Image (cartoon, rainbow, N blue to C red; front, side, top):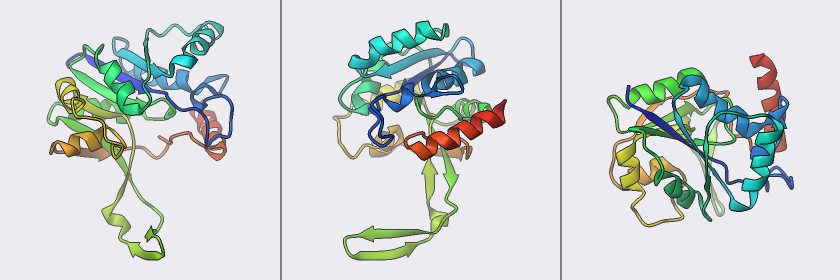
Length: 223
């Protein structure tokens, strides 16, 4: 298969975690969350090109963590922009793989099967996005109006979102719009079809203290 790249975004500053330390640097299982995430892709393909976007102010701190944990997986650190959009755009200038994944740095439990299936689906599709079904009932709420929705018509979106690299570079030529919530939303704005595949429930995005408790449990189960 063609050469692969991954952009791991890690621009969080810890607001919802109520922590002075950005959540991507918080330790689970004796090392920072971000190192677990990088390992996901390295374990799938030792030759994959890994780019990590970080706020400029935290790049030095990351370097100290790399030394402290003797972390030797090759990766390039890219200065993040004010918004996720600009961070990924900066990284895309360095990407050389034919296919590229964009993944949240605080999703360290994406399964190997999910990552492999995502790249494999690029053989037949330009844009591949993992989703999972919603279990709970959901309601639409706006001002004082509320009504039930059919949950079977909705999905929760995960990463990695995978693309032909030329396609992702093309969609990032659009001007920034704050309505862009993920890479698929940019592709959708350009009218590109989005191919959905099944994600994995463990692929949580760690953003709160409760998520940290879940992450520790998941990590214990992996051992």
